[in-house]
Length: 366
Image 1 (cartoon, helix red, strand yellow):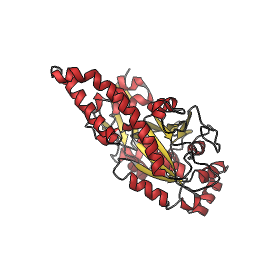
Image 2: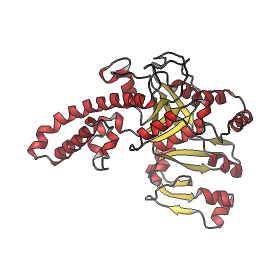
Image 3: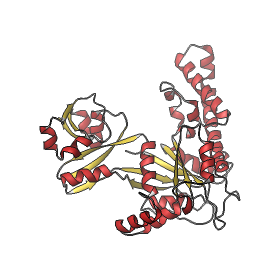
Image 4: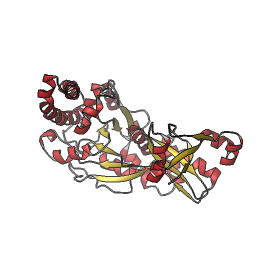
């Protein structure tokens, strides 16, 4: 599925170092602003222990995980909404993403320059928030002018609904909050969908800390938590430099030994990828056979015919039924045949909403 998470942040906060850990694509990482100019795109494998567990039972020829796209976007500065620095390019690149990973510098290091001369993650967050809000306000104002006259006559009900929704978003933005804080109802969202608002996208704040703060965070992380407590946003603590060292290790055993020494259970990038996947409102179902065990990405709430269409569009058109086994049932009983014998294989129709982890086989006729 062509859904992307964009990594954003001020210059020199660790975005490109983090991206390098996530992807085989190597973004340039250097100790000066505007090192990244064009967005780097990486297709990242989503770690999922369930896939390996299924493979242990099925013993397939191939194992195919699911993926998510991560985009490393050029650093932003004050005035970006007016085109300062790489502003226009930066904002256009964010517009193409479905969710935002906002990296904040939460470490002291005199050898790494900060674009504003001091470490203050809350200030950094507000700089980017303000630029994105200003750009959104510009878009909303243009559309308000387009619908204002029709809405005030009251003759066009859809125009009235559009206008009122836009005013709601405008008031939120003018109060210094992001569009997501307008808490639009599901029936209001279509009225702003065409604007591709930057601040309505789901966001996760990634606090880049020093090695000593990898497990429990630090005063800067606490400041970020306090600043975003009223936002519908997640926070993840990560040490980009340490993740870079882990990524450079060649074997799984070496990486596990490093993690044990640091008192960590898994690499921070694994947690980041999983969180990005959730942020995009995605989930996974599996197909399991001797040729391959494979993870498939779908949007939460997707029904069986749409989920089948992720494999091939013909599956949606000719959908007849889905054979479904819950993941836990498959692991407990050990095989499709055992699940069938135990009555744990269900036949589901067109209205079935796929659950995360379902092991599925589709019947179709084209």
